[in-house]
Length: 177
Image (spheres, rainbow, N blue to C red):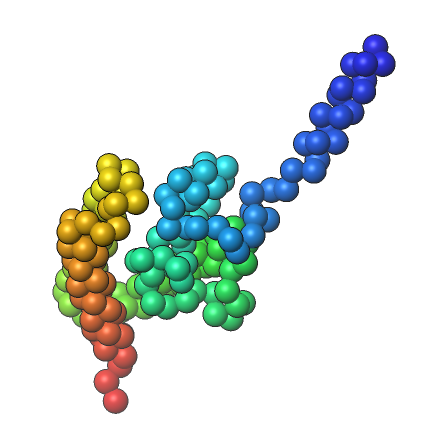
């Protein structure tokens, strides 16, 4: 009986010491490693899982696909998984709000830009998946492979096109003076 009570107490004590995944510091994590991102993401609820993966792929400054624009500027850079998720969700909400504002402009122009943005995003995501598969297949040798260089070049070109599209969005959203 005492042994059962002690076992239960020890298990409860150990469980209470485990920090929530949201408190995990980002410092020291290699978010370019899909295994690290997957391990953390699996511990998060679905909506946060997508937000964390988006942060790792697009918004983490060390990412090869870094969007070039830090999110959460008003609150500083994310230092934990939870902050990364919160900043990503807030950034996505802000972008949705901005898109609603853009929709007040000429619909055909805005719709065309939205469709083009979706196509660019899909193509970038496809290239990221191809690159990940290349790394799975070749391991560390993938970094120096001709295929990896080609994929990186294509991603850079698409990111440049997406940046140009962002400037077009800004012009379309700015009322004439």
